[in-house]
Length: 160
Image (cartoon, rainbow, N blue to C red; front, side):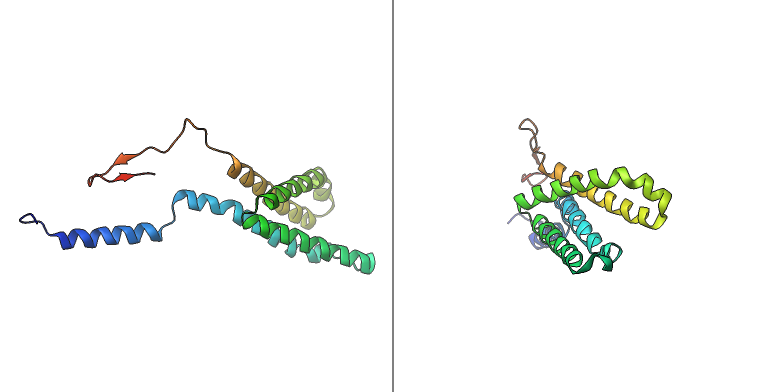
């Protein structure tokens, strides 16, 4: 050991740095949460909206169809949030299809009922966000763009 160098302090600070970096999620981890949160938001909003879609005059078959649709939508959404690729594709397709069906009717809903318009608008924003986030999460980084490595004071290589 060199004279005048206190190794115990250096080890304590290195341990504290490693604990701090393990506790804070990296930016890529935080970005990976966005699609999952939007998917769960779409599923949650779908369940919240069930009471507005409930129509007792539809009879037992209509109520069963609504319940079945909500269950299927939630199962596909949870599977997509868990990272199952096929479920993500199906969820993206259903979000896009739903947007194509709902968006043209928004001006009519605005003239008819502000409450129904607000519900449809929230649904469209969540579904468009989930569709965009899932689409961007599938974009692969070009081969020419890689991680840049540099050396810190200790000579260790770090990657951003």
